[in-house]
Structure formats: structure tokens, C-alpha cells
Length: 306
Image 1 (cartoon, helix red, strand yellow):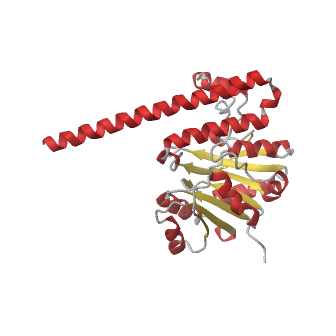
Image 2: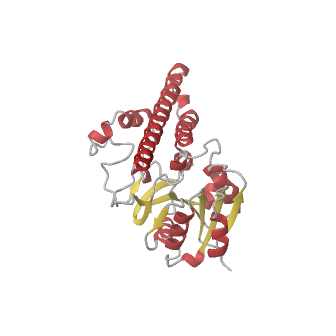
Image 3: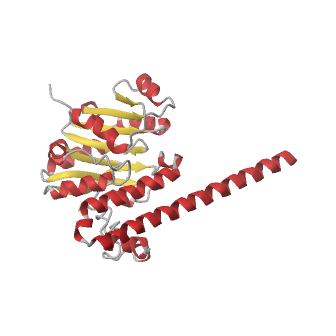
């Protein structure tokens, strides 16, 4: 008996309703019966595991006692996955029609493709730029941080990181895809290794794509497969930690793949810039939280006076 074509790996943390919606949308795929579906729950303790075992018996559940992060959670199950293709899929996604089987068919038709990603849309239907990106080189990062990429979205040089000048309805070879929905050949994973566990979350997808391309495989974007993604459904629950994880991912990627090209003093400036950016975003989160508390207190006082 043939094994599964695709092993779908979902890491869940406190998003049971979105997870159920994702699984329901997946079941509409014409090739669903050939999928192996694995959910790793990172100690949600919110009924997610119970829901899976009761309502989705076809799903293999790996339950962690702690939140071990995205990379480590995926690595716990990837080695045992039986599919020809590994699909990393976020629980806050909704798959359109045959999105997964379309990706698998695309990879089968492109034997030099190590990883493929779909057109990922925001809930309002706009393109989520992270689904097809360039690597965050210093030039690309500079254009993005200075907002030049937003001021000139149709300029191929200035908008290089998000590739906003490229037609979203055309197939494209890219540097990196979004880990929210990213399909990789199992043989490629066996060749380049698992996700980098130094990255708790955010950036592990770019690092994987870098290693895939270093191994001479192509990374391709195909608009024939479409997925909706509620960006940050879990991370919004922990905004401070999310900021730290995001910037740690930046630092790890730079250290692994770019730092060796520059002198140590310049690298120190880059790390300082990453740390400063993180501090600014943490401060913004603190101010927002304080404003929200004040607004809530004002509403409560107003209701008591009525």
C-alpha cells in the first residue's frame, strides 16, 4: 500500500477555533484521503487536544507539556513523517479548494523544486507579502526599514524584499516563502537537515529556504494554490515575547548567513540596530498596553456612575 503523498504538520498554541476551521477546509481537498495530518500542540491547555481527539480522529496528535516553539515542535515529528512532501501549515489558515494537492502536483511537475509556496492572502483578500520574498540582505533590509519600499512599491530595486513589483498572479522563483504554508520535499529535508531550533519562531522559514537554495534546489511561488492566513493569531497573545522572538530570528539569520561577509565592528553595529529596533517595539507595546488599561478603566468608571 502506497504511503501518504503529503505530511501536513501543524503547530498549535491556543487557537482551537482557528485550528478546527483549518482542518475543515483541508478536508475539502480532493486528495485529502492521501494526506497524513499531524498536529503538535505546544501545551495550549485550552481544550485543543481534547477537541482534536474527539472531532478529528484522523489527525495524529503530539502533545507537548511545554511551549517548545515552532521549530522544535516541527522537528519532533518531521523525521517520522511518511509523506513524499512535508507541508508546514499554520492553524490560522484556510485552504481554498485543492490548495494542498495543487502544491503537491506543482512540485511533481517541477523536479528541481525543493520548496514551493502558495499565494497567501490576508482575510481581506490582499496579498500577504511574506509568501514570496527575497533574503533580508542589508540593502533589502535598509529599503524596508526606511519605508522606501512602501514609497516606491513598483521599483524592483527598492521593493526587492517583498517583491511588490512582481505580478502576484504569475509563477516566480524566489528566495524565501512563508512558513504559514510551505511545502518541502522530504528528500530535501533529509539532505539539508531540520529547522534551526535556535529560532523559537519567526525566521525559521527564511533560514530553511536559504539552506535549500544553498543545496542547489529551487524555491518557487505558485499562485495556482491559494490560502488565507490570519497573521499572528497566536503571537498576539504574547506581544512582548513575540517581539523578542522576531528580532532573535533576525540576529540568528544574520549571524549564520551574512556576518562572515563583514568585519566584526560592522557586525556589532548590525546587532545593535536589531536590539534597538526590538527595544523600540517593546516600548510601543508597553505604551499601547497602558493606554488600553486607561481606556478600560475610564469605561468602567463611566458605567459605575450611570
